[in-house]
Length: 227
Length: 193
Image (cartoon, rainbow over all chains, first blue to last red; front, side):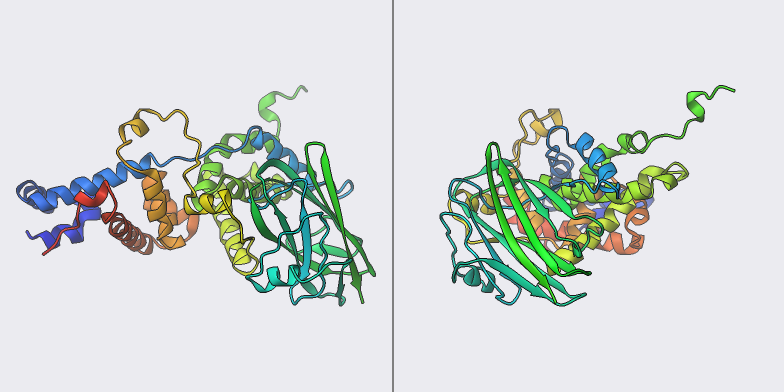
């Protein structure tokens, strides 16, 4: 038995899937070789750490909310908002900026009272480049990504973001829903939330994004023209 | 004729409730973040509700649900590979949170097993896991952290047992390598010769 053999068989040895003479040989070598003994001890210790590796529990009441939201999301008549929790990292505060940028620098608009764009990517550079009414033009059956960029300087819990879509417009992956709601924890910094819009019919209309935190609310509108 | 409770078709909630904790744990292992785990499980529940009539007829619901969750996770990974929610810029606390993604994990009352392992730095382990590929990290956490057997992981993921075993071996080896230079793992060098 050699140290190389131990290395090759270490996983099976740890998992107890070697038996008989081989196990006895491995055991004898480990007992006689200080380096292999340390390696096995370290591997076992790592296994213990992995078994104790923590799982952070869900937010309070999550399971009940999730079950209720699943039921609601499948009710076509009511088309209620869907509770959706995502890890958006951004911020909503007194100075909120939402910048809307098409995938290829279509339009942008600063809608808050303190934008903080930091050029560095194509989108963020585009977002920082100007202000004005936001609008996107799409062809029928086209899929286009519109990025919502949130900027501010403080962390907030329980921020609700609701997106209302005009008739004939859907988000990819959310067929049949005209209102989608996210609940999220926002952190300092700027983030991009890509919305993959699909034009299915109609002439378009206004996509309304509503951010709510406690008593504060910001509403932003993006005109989407389907041609 | 009266209908006894045992004759009633279980509701969607009755069917799913016993499995939610385990599904959430699995979702957390896949994603590593509460918000993403909640997001993933929510997505699965929406899909399951649309198939609620099938659920009561599924013989072994737990593994089947785990498989649905895994498939949804894979689909989401593909989607986010194209459309990733990106952190742009950021400063101060945001930067610190990214550099130490597990540093703020709430673990207020570790059990005896966790308390016995205080010698280990969870943050280092977290960084070590991040160095693994998604495939390797997934099998490692399912097997070594959650205690799934390779055969069970095969039934959930559809990946052959031999491939899983190979991935597990490589994942453990890679993790040991990454952690080898970190305290308190430094003393436990890999075997030479």
